[in-house]
Each structure stands twice: as C-alpha cells, then as structure tokens.
Image (cartoon, rainbow, N blue to C red; front, side, top):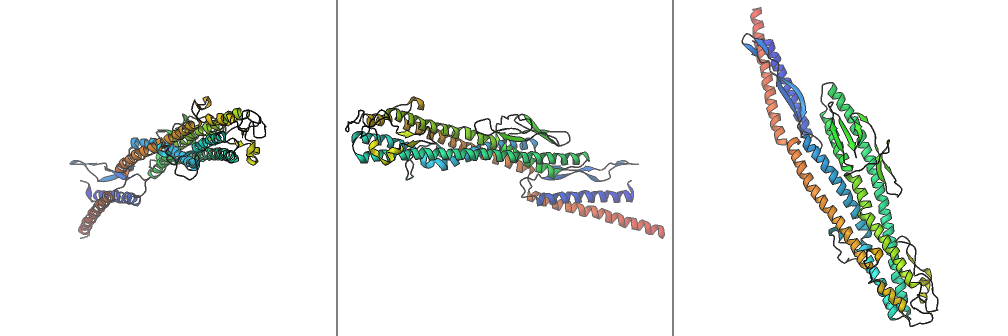
Length: 474
C-alpha cells in the first residue's frame, strides 16, 4: 500500500499537473486572436509506480512537457506559398503602378485584362497620336501651301514628342522606384535573418537545459514566413531545435550563427541585383517579392521601356531620312524634322515651332504645289518597318500595350490563385494549431474539476491523518 503520506503526495502531484494544464489553457485563450500563435497542450504521464505487497501500485500523474500542436509539413507549405505570393504581389504592384502612370499615354485603362479597348480619357493615347502625325502629313500633302495644315502638323508632332518624353520619364522614375524597393526588401530580409539567428540561440539554450521555447518557436516561424515573402528560402531543422536557412543555394544562417547576409549590386546597367554581402556571390532567386520586383522591372516593364525607345528612335530615323531631302516654301532643304535619339529626348525642330513654312513638304525646290515628300511621310504610317519587327508604328504600339496588359492580367490571375491556396492552407493550419474557444473553455472546466477532486483527496487524507494522530494521543 502507498500509505497516507504517499497518497498525500499523489494528490499534490495531481493538483500541480491540473494547475499547469489550467495555466496553459489560459495561455491558449489569451492568444486566441493571435495568428502567429500555435496551440499548446500539457503532456501528462503516469508517475513512476511503487512496489507493494500487491505488486506495482500507481502513484498518480506527472506533467512531462508542454508541447505545441503543429504540423511541420503544413508550415513548410505555407512558407513555400508565401514565397509565391510575395513574387506575384510585387509584380502586380509594379505593373499596376505603371498602368497608373502610363495609362493616359499608352491607353492602359483596360489593360488589366489584356484589352486594348479605346481609352475613355480626354487625351489621345500614343497610338492615336502616331496616327494623328501621319494624318497631319497627309493634310499637308493635300494642301501643301496651307499654313493651317502646316501648323497642325507641327502641333501633332510636338504633342507626340511630349508623350514619348513623358512616358520615358515615368518609366525611368518607376525603374528607380523598383530599384529602391529591391534595396528595401533586402534590408528587411537581413533584419529577419538576424532575428531568426537570435531566436535560434535562445531556443538552443532553452532546449539544452531540458526546457521548451514554444513562444520563441512561434516567433521564429512568423519570421520565416515573412522572410519567405521576400525571397525563396530553404530550411533544415537541427538536433538542438535550431533552424539553418539558405537563400539561392547559399547558407546564411547556421543554427545560432549568422554566416552571411544579402546585399544589392549593380552589374553595370543600373538594374540592381542581389548577392551575398560578405562573399559577394550573385544569387539566383526563384520567388519572393525581391525577385518579383526584379522580374517586373526587367521583364514586362523593361520590354515596354525598350520598345518605346526603339519606336521613338525608329520614328526619328525614318521621318528624317525622307524629310531632309524635301524643300520648304522658301526653297530651303537638308534640315531634320525630329531632333533627339530616342523616347527620352525626341523633339521637333525648333525652327518649325516658330515658322511652319519651313516644313519641307516638296520634292523639288521652289515648287510650292509639290507634295511628294509630305505624301511619302504620310504613307510611312501604313508601311511595315523592319526595326519594329515588320509592323507599322501604330500596330507596334498596340502590340506593346497588349503584351503589357497580358502581363498584368497574368499577375492578377496568379495573385488570385495564391490567395485561394493560401486561405485553404491557413484554414488547415488553424484547424490543427489554432485555438478553439469552445474547446479551451471545455478544457478549463475539466481541469478545474480535476483540480478540485485532487484537492478533495488531500483533504480526505488530512482528515485520516488527524484521526490517526488522535488515536495515538488518546
């Protein structure tokens, strides 16, 4: 038999176990609305039995540990999806910013679905302005000496040049903003790497002393998911409870040691890329907002930027090659119609701005009614140009807008897909690791009753001990 004193100890151990269970339940309830919290449970085990004349007899219960209720595979899937979501969200943001800044010039108001529907804005878009230019050359060809037609041509050309300039400036500004975004995300990633390393050290210390660090594990998991939103990561769990983190094949966190960090570098074209800070190893990233921003900058937006510049430079070359052989109303020849070399600096010959009579529309000198040069320039608008992949100026512009719209539409679709998958995964994790108020309240009552019953055992044994003492003294 255990005897009264051992039975008293049995009741005390039971009370302590139920008290700890109540405390952990309170912790769960307190974090019911904390999305980063993982539900905890007290693991109970039978106390070591004691030998008696009747065999081994139980001695009650002990609390062996406080464990998290989690699914590591599910956490890994959520981290992976966070990287996918970060990638497509950053692309969507970059392309939507371009849509906002360039919509007036490129008719991007409906491009989110890949549409090239005519813009409802009051200002003509770039494609319209290209058509207006060639129509204005046609008007001059129809009435070579009409000053109104000549002035209209100069105005159309100046409006087109201004649109090219503005689009180029906006794309340059956006490109700079995306470079800044890459740098900011790298800074955030480095802070998270440092935090994970620090938490690893605290978790290892707690594990070494035989304890647990559940709340620190939760904080680390949240940091890992936030890091995954910035860049793709590979993690391995070590025997001491720490996590090692690699990015782009380079290990940056080794347990409680921060081996390296991230840094941006310029490969020579002004477009920031990512490398390790200490070893200067260029990294090939495959997910996260850092790579999403880089791919948007160098992909859809880079192509649009390059194509607009090519279109402007081709327009300058094609128009000037025909125009410079013409003659104005005063018999002068040899001047250029456009100045500049690309979309950023295209302009109209300043002499034409003050004197439209200097438009070189004739094919021979002093032939005021001749329109051969103006007619050739008007026909240029319907000709396929090799520098534009054998497309006309207008169709090349429309294709650029369509490609941009398709890129934004794809980003929108991918973000929607990510949101659906991420919601499903979070719901699955919540069903495993989340706090159920109903369940915890039921546990609270159960542990309370068990605590009261254990207390009753002690009370009963105490009365029995009092009886025994009274018998001795009697």
